[in-house]
Length: 204
Image 1 (cartoon, helix red, strand yellow):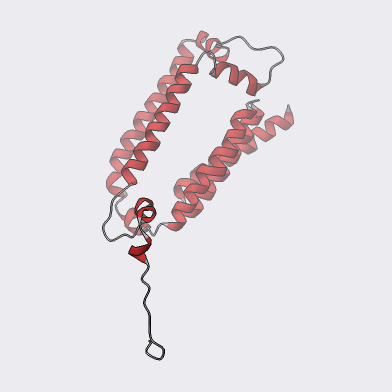
Image 2: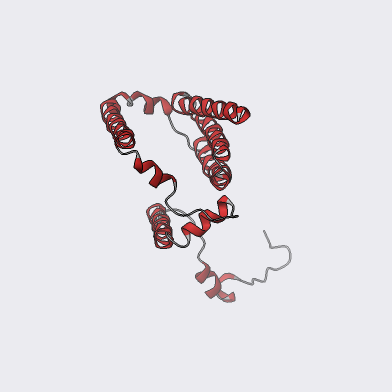
């Protein structure tokens, strides 16, 4: 228990510190690297809580795909970050208002736990535990039985978002050379090949 307590406080402290560095780092590449560190610390906390599936998802999906994609996008795009920071102060009132709303929501949630202590039992054990099953197996049984329609609906939402992103980014620009497979397959030999007889000594 002592080792688990020490590991929890170490992971939690590093998670908070890396989260602060994500929003305070001046270099966006450093921000993405701190975000990767935050994902690793969150995965460590999930392992301590017994949620190894969530920890695996954090490492494989978020660190291995999302964060690396962010890193490549930040490094490849030529963005003038000084101009972006110059106009950040004008959004400070809106950001402060959103922060106050989120703080009020957190206070309401904490107040609900204090006012209704019985809700903690209902949230901690919403379904009966499966004897002899791992955390990943229990999660799969729960998703594909009780929440199968919501799971499928979330997949449809992601599919629609992917199609929308493709449609929005697919632009027909003039002056850009592109391959037309149909015209290449439909062309004839007479249209592209010309045989000329050049007398000896009169060629180019």
